[in-house]
Image 1 (cartoon, rainbow, N blue to C red):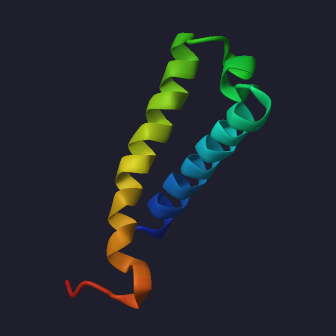
Image 2: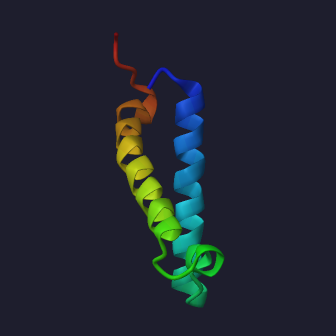
Image 3: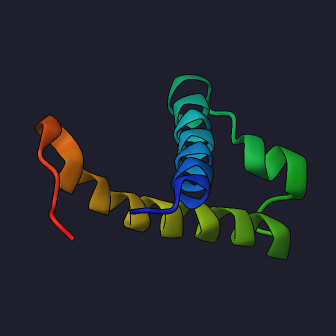
Length: 71
């Protein structure tokens, strides 16, 4: 978690994924499917990237509450 660019990129992709889930939940509108087609190879890549970013962001829990790991 020392690479600020990677952290920012993964956070941005996860936020985009969260907004998409919000659109699905509130309005039954899947923005990714609308833009790239329903389960096309491109939309599957987008969904996979959001999932990978979510898994990466699990490591942010180590920094919650102001606690820092010593390297």
